Length: 317
Length: 151
Ligand SMILES: Cc1ncc(C[n+]2csc(CCOP(=O)(O)OP(=O)(O)O)c2C)c(N)n1
Ligand code: SF4
Ligand code: SF4
Ligand code: SF4
Ligand SMILES: [Mg+2]
Image 1 (cartoon, each protein chain N blue to C red):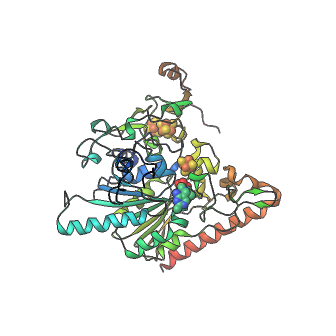
Image 2: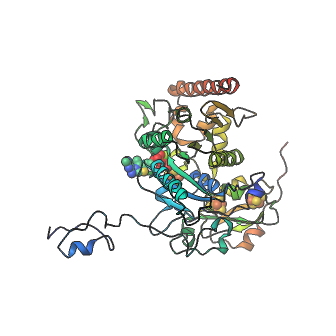
Image 3: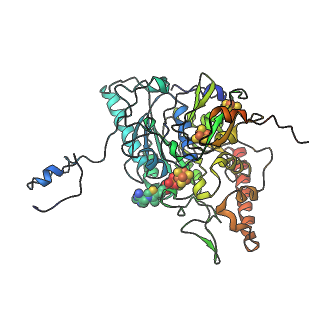
């Protein structure tokens, strides 16, 4: 694979962008930071598929496309099937020697939001992983169905208010825990699974490159702060992501072959989760005295999860 | 079948329908659309800079979202250290970097989110927000001095 050097940002910046501007994602949207970085970290041909969601509707506003590579959208749930099908066809035609350029390296990438990944497209994703297609699936996890007005998904964390799990006099927002999609995808025995974040651009680029280079189905959950639904100023997308990784709300780690866990970022100063929560409107109600227990529960969950990750890293099982 | 009118556009079989005879087969309907991003061969795009490419009119590169902006970032090259933070985090592919140097802002595609200003590490910043109508010279003449570190 021809990879772009990510030794330092200056070298990385010589990549020629293949994700174009004048898409219609909100100003400051992290989806495009993540997609740009994926496309900049290789100069191989890419076949990209995308589930319905903010990324898809905003980058294919007829008669425009923001994609400089092959790109396909079919439905809400089937980017993984589409990528798998394209990859199977590519393999078959390569064998027969009927491709236009039989030697050109091609990588297959599917993007989905958390709604399409954790919920509605999950069986398609799981099926494609079980069949073992050689592709990389990237979830843009903004913890809600953003494109349809911010409904809860199984990626929405406890305590966040959403349009279908609203905080009010009788509720503190969502009551259920976030689904552990990284563990679920690792349990498929996938050769490479990771959780990455755009503020840590280098570990994200390296993780993307690893996934693209690894044969077989690879899964990456990326933290994608959504200024509109998380309710923060668009300029703060990166500082919010810093808080997400430094409070360990979003630990950065990879799991190889379903068992070998490596923590990729250890904050020097782990910040209390209040700092992350206080920076976003969707958690504002948690700072009322009657909701103090929710913040405590979130912090407890974070601590336990971090402890588990560290033990698994040590145990190598 | 005579009065059946499907809500279909040009090229999607409406002519056959309106002829009032046979419905077109499922395999004749053009579902969706295919938009070429480039004129001609696109296999080498990853090795071409934007200004070297043959964009087709369908490529959003040829469109603009400048009207989304209320404020715009202004770039002061004298302070810039070419760290490329602004390049890596701009969500709208609007930082023009060539050969490891930050050259300026693509105002056709910048939405004025201010992320680049936030991530710029220099003191004073090399990118600052100004009113959309402010001209470059006036903006540069108002650039703040280096801030002293608070002890
Ligand atoms: C089968 C199906 N169900 C529902 C929808 C409506 N829908 C379109 S986009 C969307 C939300 C997408 O949420 P997510 O996958 O998290 O992506 P985001 O927009 O947050 O990036 C929904 C519910 C649909 N298009 N198809
Ligand atoms: S709603 Fe959120 S995810 Fe969707 S485009 Fe806006 S910022 Fe991005
Ligand atoms: S204001 Fe936003 S869109 Fe404009 S150049 Fe800066 S980061 Fe890019
Ligand atoms: S972030 Fe600031 S210093 Fe760094 S390249 Fe951009 S303008 Fe220059
Ligand atoms: Mg979402």
